[in-house]
Amino acid sequence: MIHEDAEPRVQRPERTATARSVLMCRPEHFTVVYRINPWMDPQLPTDTSLAMSQWDALYRTYLELGFDVQLIDPIEGLPDMVYAANGGFVIDNIAYGASFTYPERQPEGPAYMDWFRRNGFEVAEPEHINEGEGDFLLVGDTILAGTGFRSASDSHLELGRLYGREVVSLTLIDPSFYHLDTALAVLDGTPGREHIAYLPSAFDEPSLGILRARYPDAIIVNDEDASVLGLNSFSDGYNVVIASRALDFERQLRGHGYNPIGVDLSELLLGGGGVKCCTLELRR
Image 1: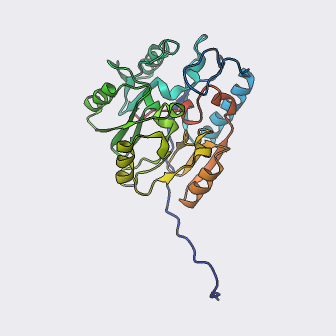
Image 2: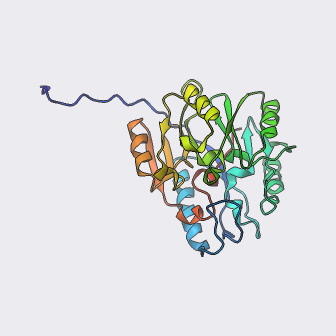
Image 3: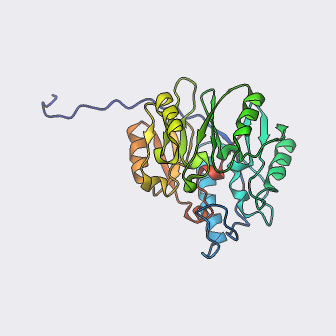
C-alpha cells in the first residue's frame, strides 16, 4: 500500500563504469622548495612519506576499480613529477607532449615523452607551451582546452590539427585554479552522454556562456569544495574518485547517480595537486 504522504522516488540516471588505463608517478621526491602556484609555500614543511602513503591509497583505489595503472619512474630533482596529468595528452595512441611554463618543471616534458615512446605511443613534440591533461580534457568528441595561466592558446590550435577534433577554448581567471582540471571535472565523457562539473568563478564570462550552453545539466560546485581541489577528480563514468573533504560535491554526485569515492591527498595539495593531477589517462 502506498501512503498518500510518501515521498516520490527520484529516478537516478543510469551510469556505466568503463575501466581506464592511466599513468602515475610515485612521489618519492615530493617536496615544496619553490613557488609556482598559490598553493605552494616553501616555508611550510612537507612530509614525503605521508605523500607516498596518500598517493598509494589512490593507486590502490584505481587497482580495485580494475584500472590498468602504468608507472613512470620518478626523477630526483623533479618534485612535481607526481602530477602526471601535466606530462602530456593522449588520444588514439598519439601522445602530445608537454612544454612547461616554468623552468622548474621543464625537464618533465622530455621525461614523459621518452616514456611514451618506450611504451609504444606515437609522440607529437609540442611547438607551443602546454601542460598536458592539466589543461586539456576530452568530453565526448570535443577537447575542452584551458588557457589563462599555463597552456598557451596557440597550443589549442596545435591540438586541433593533431587530433582532428573540435577544440573549445576556455579562459581561467582565478590564479588558485590555474589548470582546467582544477576547475572542471569530466564525469561522463561518453559521446551523447557528456556530463561535467565546474566552478563558475574560475572562468571568464565568455567561457561561462560556452559551458552553460553546452552542458546545461552540469553540476555546479561550491567554493568550499573547490578550495580542497574537489573538482580535481577522476571518473570512469560511474565511480568518481574525489577529495574526501569535498562533501557537498559528494552529495551532488550521489544525486546524479554516481558512486563518489573519497581519498585524502592533503599532503599533495601543498604542491597544488589532487586526484586528477596525479592521473594521466592513456587512450589507446
